[in-house]
Image (cartoon, rainbow, N blue to C red; front, side, top):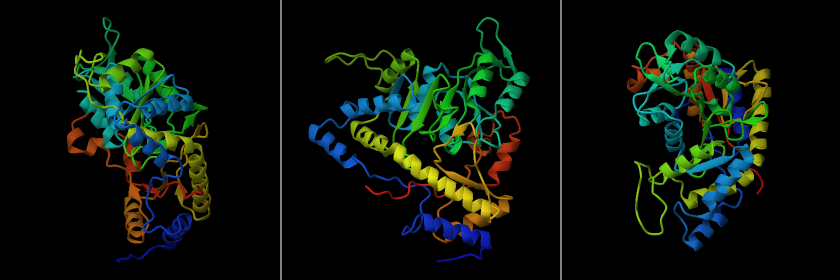
Length: 392
């Protein structure tokens, strides 16, 4: 195996990470962990033959989610991207509209906007949240939008397109200044759709992420804090939107004992009962997993402080789920050297996603210069953050 020459701080950090996850080689960035009733509930699905979207675990998963987050309604989806697509649609985003989001995000955020037939507009993030900056949002809106007197909607003065949504993301599970973002959005009558894909278990000012905007979305991909193998969830306090999301996700089929009638173009997006059974078992362990991840984050913070390494920590008003911990390098060269050193020596790390406005598919989209996003892209590295093996 090829090994590179490492500076001592790199070497010490690599050895520290290996000590957190003994016996694992390579140390994964974030692996799923199954220590509860997953097999039992899955077996029950098989025994009852209810393995598709009709089954008790889908309902239970939704109910547990509402109880945990405080949202009134939850609708389970096949994945987070599908959930965000429908969230945008039920929030009122239409083909030809524009939706403001952040360039510093996973591509699924921008893709869901495109799936809804809209165009992303990218605004900058805050350095201390990695999420959308309410100041940047307000500044862009003031400079680029007028309010249509007849429709009471915000319109882009350059493109003459309606801005029908704002999608901030709680990056790596760190809450952004979501209350301030909602306040800015309300001034322009634009609904907020929270991309909370990474932030199940995160709160801001003691309120769960995903419950500030009109609609919130979670993901249960295999690398998330809890997983269903693949899955997503819409949460909302709006009963009508929840019903609409559920209807669209089940091919917009009108309920009948035997007739197949569909009243609009829908999607086959519902979560299946087998996946939901895993989700129910994982939710039973969520608080335990969050404690483990909090301890890991605190261990990183202590180590980095003693080794003059900058460790990312979010807002004091927020409680992150610590989905992925991050360190901040001095520049891109140091970032790349660290990525090589870690991955060559059995520790999986990764940089930030390439910024959306740099991708060929979104290079044409408007943005505000994205100064903070560009700075962070050159410096952020995620380090292993999975739940450490617990006693069953």
